[in-house]
Amino acid sequence: MMLRLQFNNRVALSSCNRQLSIVAFVKAYDFSFNELVEQAESAVGLLQERRSALISAAVTGKIDVRDWQPSASASQQQFEALEA
Image (cartoon, rainbow, N blue to C red):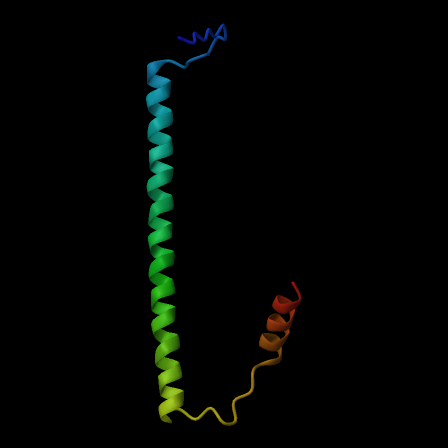
């Protein structure tokens, strides 16, 4: 048994030059987006390394964190983040 579908819809197409310019535009934004993603991933990696180094320094006693107090604004920001 064969099923035959018939579509009577019309589709508007832009000229070939217009389509090519749209493709170039999208590719440029895609390249820019991918670049931003790579930069963000790199920044996350560096922040993770810094965090690990800071924790190691605190644990091994290379830095003294006994009298450390968070700033008032930092505490407020963390509290607001927890409420959200």
